[in-house]
Image (cartoon, rainbow, N blue to C red; front, side, top):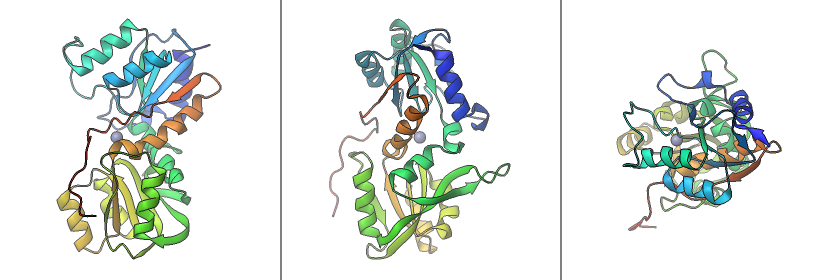
Length: 266
Ligand SMILES: [Zn+2]
């Protein structure tokens, strides 16, 4: 039996909070540091359904990638989903902790987990940190052998958890890809870095104009996956950090907001 403090210390060592962006709000959201923990549930989003999962699996600590709160809060009443999460966590003696942009910037971090899931080797940061070039945002790596963009898209769909969003591809499906840039989560602000660094860029939340401008300017092919799916591989990485100290359960409930994808032409 460990304590919340011990688990938080291990996670803070792997994903130091000082690596988080200034606007972020990582760390413990609710719970007692001295509470005992034998089971930890790991999930991407702190939604009410994830609290249900924590109760069902007997977890005393939920570790999420996304923080519950990022803006000013004036109540945690059981009148909205965020208040429900806090209230039910406290009622059920469950602590809630998040590692967000600190896990994005850590090495290994969220994009390493995505890159490893895709089978990429020789990883380097897509956008190196100005203070430490071994760290940074996103990763660039190589597939063991080249494949067509279409085959690569199918590979992505196979290794990441299935979602209604699916896998969207932009580019010549017959082109060969070997060097792959990845960024877990919303990665369209790094399109410029990916444009010439790789044959294809895998990320999520790509928007019409940015994707279009990137492509018409000769940028690399794009593979757009569900935000949840792009960050989900990190849950196993984070679980491995605390495995052995506690029992870990990785949530497999898709918390991506989309529930159906209709009308695709292929
Ligand atoms: Zn995210």
